[in-house]
Length: 431
Image 1: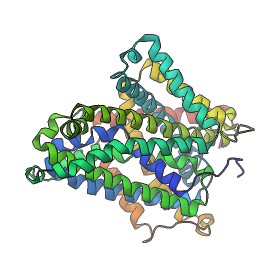
Image 2 (image 1 turned 135 degrees about the horizontal axis):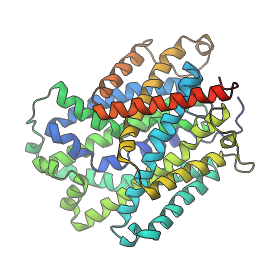
Image 3 (image 1 turned 180 degrees about the vertical axis):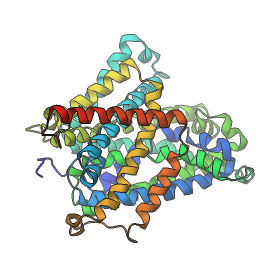
Image 4 (image 1 turned 30 degrees about the vertical axis):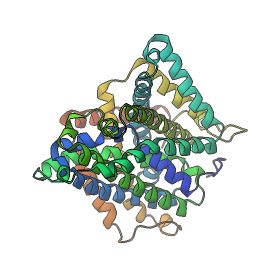
């Protein structure tokens, strides 16, 4: 299928996008949240989640090396299970997981910067801030994927600097006694803590949505995803060791800003400023990464006839899906201005796990498709063992969701199903 999109994303760019999108705002509160139930033993959950996310990443790498048109997770699931599954995946992903969370982190950025500029969080100034934020990022990405990628690479480096400074100077301030395990491990506390931690590893589904613009995907996708995840895991483990080793039992008392607490000990009040700047850059980088990637899901849905055709238009000069980018950023702007319902934010977290489950199952299904068996690309060793293990892992994580989250997810899927079959009723051309 010819999409007329430039292939400008290489392995280093993809790995940078992985680090940028995954290392988001969560890292600045993650150490205290995970340690709340396990203390120093929380480090075990990092290895558990690291193993689980690598299983899922291998599935993304296999299907991503074979499916080379834009759409990422939506395209993977649609190729394996057909239009209905693709419709669900497309809308659960771009709306349930992305628009609402983007609006939320845009508000978080506004509040973070208001520490230095209080006027930003007031009235019309707040609205103007969101216009400049979403409008500026839309402009960068409409001009070309390479400009969006360059901005992501800058944001990745800029936000890692304060984190690496805290890790580098903090290693020398670790007290061995603070790392002693004082909690008993069991499936219940490991499961609840791992669920919290796993959300900090989410982001693979975002970076692969530009699959139609990736150079040599059979090599770039597995190399970019796996190398990016390796860097994230090492960084997370180092940050957890420093926070636990420096703060000890006081870590759980600094739930809102554990890294800021460590930075204050290491660098004084200047450390707090450093981390606030790092937080702002981190949020901006995550938002820019989403605006680079997610409009391609709308573009792919329009290309396949499940969303309005206008979203599939490609800019004649810049060769980017400019209408999809404009629509996506406009929705993000509106939800940022008028606020986001808490229940929908909770739904967005559950939606990510559902998307992961769909991709893992698609990996298994595509293995048995003759047309895919003859295609070149990365292939997970060991048959379907790893996809099956990943499926079990995701179901285990989903089992730790609250009753309200499960009910909310079911209602959302049911509503999308009604919309799909209503569309089919009035438009027989939809498969």
